[in-house]
Image (cartoon, rainbow, N blue to C red; front, side):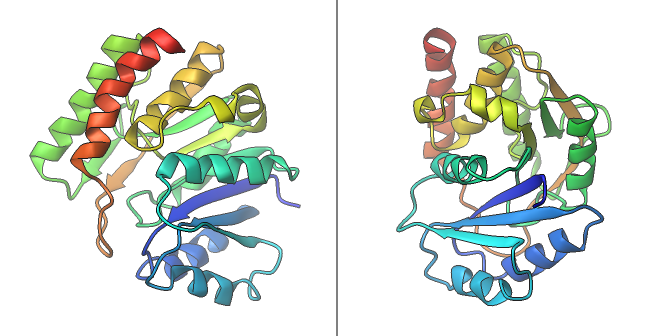
Length: 235
């Protein structure tokens, strides 16, 4: 059994999923991969199931009915992995906005002492490609806003490319996590930080998706804006 589980939520990612699976398994580390698919009507799950014989015992899928939210997909994956013997849990998007090669760097950071290794756009060496300036500014100042409200010493508070040590997920009451969208990423970091775990930012280049449709919406940003204030006083 591998010690490292990469969790990728999917919804309509047929353009990306085959290449993503093959890329992860080409890396010089023994990763296992769990796809959590929310009933993709485009056949994403069928593509994954077609690859499972090729990567027997390393590629897994959990299918859910309907779009239930990013946060619940990751929590589903965490619980699935905690019932196994995995020690490291990775969050990653399927659209190649997160470079799979950076899994190795996050893994090394976690094995070197980070309890949560964060793929960060906003520390020295990190950057964003292919985003319009307006979206870059919105994302950057969202992180500034989160730091001001929560007093959390993390530059990229909304980052979704991360590695958790098993102990962190065991210490967080996953059933108590409140948010399912953009705010989920903030809440998980904040809960780990409040429990005095060591959060380390690893510089990455974030690249906007080329294939498939973005899942971002104004409702997701609204949840995050209001949710940060709720976190400050409830967690």
